[in-house]
Image (cartoon, rainbow, N blue to C red; front, side, top):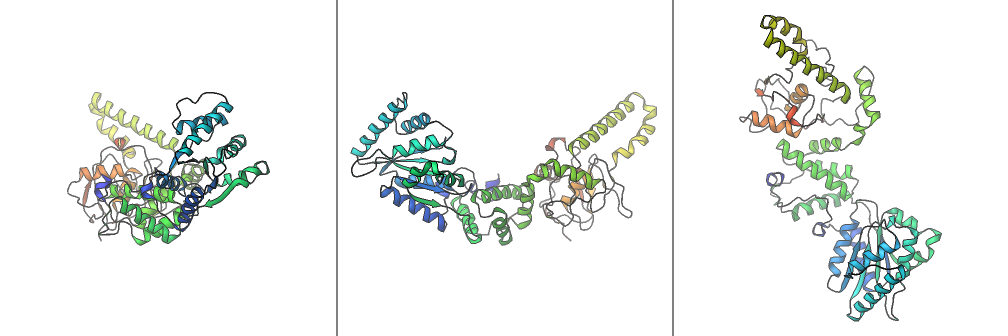
Amino acid sequence: MVLDYFKLREQPFGVTPDARYLFLSSTHKEALGSLLYGIDEGCGFLALIASPGLGKTTLLFHALHQLREKALTVFLFQTVCTSIDLLRALLAGLGVQETQGSLMQLQSSLKEVLLAQARLGKRVVMVIDEAQNLDDSVLELIRMLSNFETPREKLIQIVLSGQLELAEKIASPDLEQLRQRVSIFSGLIPFSREETQLYIHHRLQIAGYAFARPLFTRDALALIAEASHGIPRNINNLCFNALSLGYALQRKPIDSEIIRAVIADRDLGRFSKRTSLASQSGASGGQAAPAFRPAKRASSQSRGWTQKFAFALALTLALFGILVAGRWWPGNKAAIHAQSEPLLVAPTPSDSAPRSVSNPPSPIAGESPRAAPHESTVSVKPGETLLEICVASFGRCSPELLQEIRRLNPQMNNLDHIEPGQTIQLPLSVAILGQPEELPSRGVRSHE
């Protein structure tokens, strides 16, 4: 549904290292050229080192794809292993069926395979990803594999790829001999702002976007570049969630407000115990500023799941008692209704605190109270947005809630435009809409 809405053939911001989506920045081009040159020249050992998320694996897949005609390649990624485990994995990757035996027997089998490939005129290239996890003893075995050679060439080319810890490990005095044998060290750095925009454009193009209209606004692209720090994996995550939220809100192109909402949703600090305590302190009169405020009307932090659950349980029991009393003691219906009425009305909060069904604040003079979630309709006030209505009535806003409101109001062709005085049908219950979650403003604006 998301792909159809944005007219895409496939998901452009997936998490798998698909070589078709490789974008070659200046440092990516340099690293790729160094790897291919080192393998062609038979350098023996090469290293690719970069921080997480910069595209090492995708670049390696692309390099191996270019070598497929003239080399037998093996890609190893299970790096928490022993020396025997590594040899068995290498032999299995080379097509050897029998991989049992001692360390010496496995080395002998490997040398026979390498000599056979050399007679066929094919190189053998072994790439070890996440090599920073290898023990020193395993790295020492890998160094010894470079001794498999003929008078003219190495029988196996080895590429060690890993994070910055790999450079520290190779630089240690215990691995001096290994460091001396690494002929080429290559690295990757984050994208610049311009490269980030080109990267997003490139992936959209591969996914089939026609570009009749920009999918991301300029402000959105600038915000993605800043928030992602130029790291491709971060860019993919931000864009993937932005497309999902844009579809839920029926918004395109993707603007900066949607990107801000995605950034706020990915802030793990809001799940920490410290944030929860600060939120409760702010609700009781203390000053606790939220980490991110993308909307005009700021939202305070949630009061904590325990308090919400206790209030919801109390409200449920009260309503159940009313229903039972009304069924068995008809004469007491009016009295019971009068006693329970305060539980069914959510007063209007101030601008500094959200409308919430838990521990509701006192209403502000001059502002009429908003109907609680048990009522079916609300009337739009001047300047009010659909997001504010959802937060006021349910204490949150989510794609599932917006979808339910769209279903209940088929006359609303566009959730972005609501009119003052317009009547909107709301769900009678939010139980079917997933777990509660307070989201920042999604920027759904009323038509003034």
